[in-house]
Image 1 (spheres, helix red, strand yellow):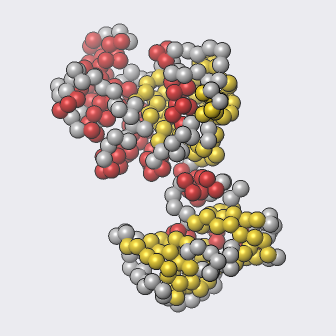
Image 2 (tube, helix red, strand yellow):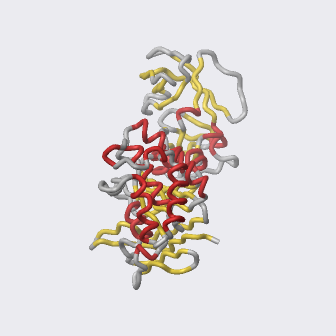
Length: 356
């Protein structure tokens, strides 16, 4: 049974529809990220789950009970949820220990029990030695750990996170992604995580809901989203890719002078007159010599249009045809080719994705 369910949820502000008929179900103990660009409706969705705003249509259910609808909405404090904000929102006049214990005090948990629970969570988030410090004496990452500890210690039914790492520098963000995933696994807590950072969503999530214009374009595990995007928007938003549009020509598809066999894109060769595909940069291998023919591989002559050295890889742009913009290829640091050099591009057609 799903613990948290959104059924046909919409939210309008005047004539603007922020969330449009959204359906989402979370299993108990699942971490689902709402991922998308600014204005896609992800934060509005989170605020409706939290009870800060009511849906204009549809319902939100928790453990089988309706907690939000257009007619009535359970107040946030009665939902059994915790929320972590972008700004941390920890009390500057309280120590780490006092901040973490604040929710337990409101719940009127006996002092001895509260102390044990605070000690345990401070140990888990590695802040026990800093329990008597004030927020101003902590780093950004430590403050975020305080916010996490305060939210988790009250044993919420659902933990909501609204862009919690956006105020941290790049190194701390990377560290905290793994910290959030570790805490999720340790407490097996249902979480809804809002972010516009795809790497953050990929590291932390069991499933990711990619949102666009108030709707979920695709809901899937990170691996499936990356490897098998269903739409052009999802393919372009998750990772780097080459988005090509071609026309069916008998038993091949013409991408502006670069041809792929129809059967390389569909086993039965049945394709529409216009074809859109996603080809990830790492699905193409560049070689000086023509490679041996292999199943699910298509080899073509190309030339290096431009290149960038990124340390861990080369980012090449290769020209396949005069009418086609150069496409990106990711190559190993040792695969060095000069601009203008003619090479072979060996394409793994099994990793080409047909888009709706």
